[in-house]
Every structure is written in C-alpha cells, then in structure tokens.
Amino acid sequence: MGLVQVALYAAPFLLLFGLLALGRFPGERTILARRVGPTPPRPRPATRRWAPGRERTRLSQLERTSHRLRGPPLVA
Image: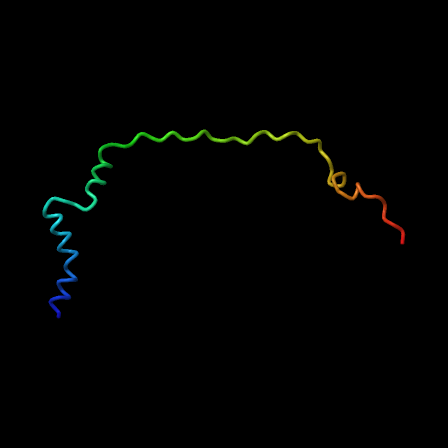
C-alpha cells in the first residue's frame, strides 16, 4: 500500500522529468511563437473628445428656482 502512494506522489514529477529529458517542454509551441517576434500593434480607435457645451447666460440660484412659476401663497 505504501509503494502505491509513493508511485502516485512521484508520477507528476516523473512525467515532467521524462518530458524534459526527451527535449520537449509543456507549452513549447506557445513559448516559441512568442520568441518569433513581436506582433505589430493593433490600430487603436481614435480618442473621443467631449463636444463643447453650449454657453449659458449666468443666472443666480434664485432666478432659476421653480417657485417663480407659481403664484403667491393662498390666504386661508
């Protein structure tokens, strides 16, 4: 029973050692593809700018309040 546990524990290390001993490496194609050369940069979309806002006349807070649209208070 102990020998089986040792074999299962060592299996990943033995597999990796075997691949390296054969001259192969996991992910070798990906690594070599990156070494070939940098890919040309992708064209970036043009930066969007804010449209200029329309100019407003300067008003005080009191002139912009909604109570100016209502009439005087009712006398009870």
